[in-house]
Length: 140
Image 1 (cartoon, rainbow, N blue to C red):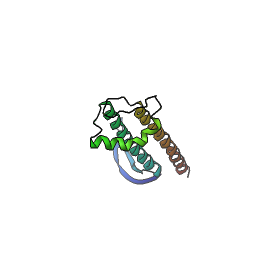
Image 2: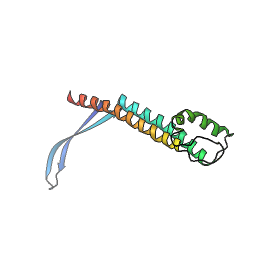
Image 3: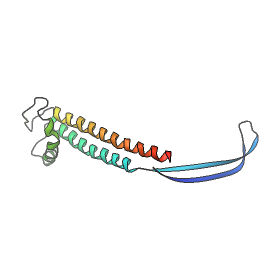
């Protein structure tokens, strides 16, 4: 962990809680914590998941509202998210997809939950490394 330190020493006379004048040196320190590599990787992971989950959520809403499959936006979203949803397509016994009719895509919801769980686990593993580095820095 990296720290920048600024120290400000304030010397002077002050009144304590009883009203008596006392001479004190007050030291103010500010620490700026720059993010570690592990924190940056966690942020990258969460942003990537946010993009994937957003696209999957769009797919879910488009399917629920029976978006026109001929629409360019709907086609792009379906094409991008198809590889992400493919492992879950027969999970709930829904075999036939009829684009253009309203449907509740359980497999898309399962994909959002699964990828979120994987992201959470990966972020925790990265965080373990960050905690070990923090302990190592404080022991020195």
